[in-house]
Length: 180
Image (cartoon, rainbow, N blue to C red; front, side):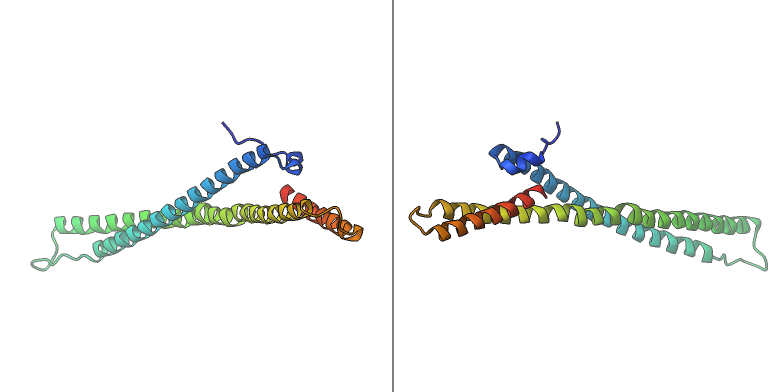
């Protein structure tokens, strides 16, 4: 099931059905915004944890590289040489893995986190701003309509024409906001 369509022509009518369909879109927009916020928060926590893990592994690999056997006598045994070389090789492998992890972390930030944050701020933020403008223009328009309905027909013609003119301007502003 998808969201009901929003037609431009329906925005002019401003029917209860249009408002209901619009509300469905607004609810989905808010749900998406919350989901992206949670995703960004979780992603940032994961990236932080990965950075901490990477630093710990790098420290461990440095310790492996720095390890030296204290030999008894003048020379190291073949086993001691083999173990020391194995530790150094393992340390080099860990450093290579951590270098790739660092690239992965940076790539995740550049390719996932930053674009999602930009999308949330620019696209969803713009839609929310449009909704606020629409709500504000709706309120102004309905307020002017209410005032106009309460005007007495006994008012001066110039006063009634001014009220009609004001309704026309607010109506146009309302239509523009509704199309956005």
